[in-house]
Length: 138
Image (cartoon, rainbow, N blue to C red; front, side, top):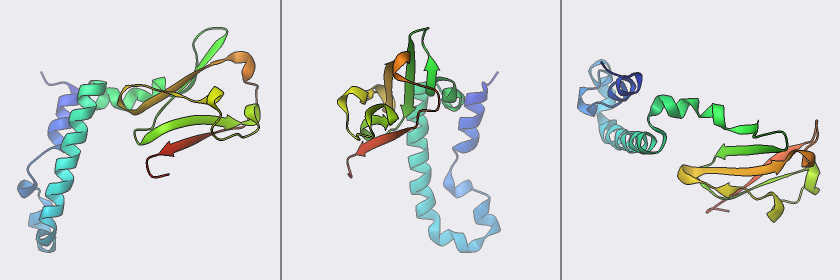
């Protein structure tokens, strides 16, 4: 019996030369190399997702562990997936909108995740927050 994840992977990944779109639209043959490149990138990303997340279905459920959520009565965790981030900071009302405040820097986890555990008393209802994401490009 196939799992839902393996069915998705087999459906998404195929041989470019067998794509039915090339039979329907002869003008696309000129772009076949581009389809090969993009399919290769997709296969590589799906391998990463399977190795790091357990499969595409599990990765799609990552919303269950992202954003703000309570750890216990005294602590909240903020977690985001930012694979191109070099460093990430929370900024907002709580730190006068200082962009690179080390007290509000998220820790890098595996596979592009960043997180920060915050004492509940440092957050108030209606507080405005933003992320400051530092990438290798800026």
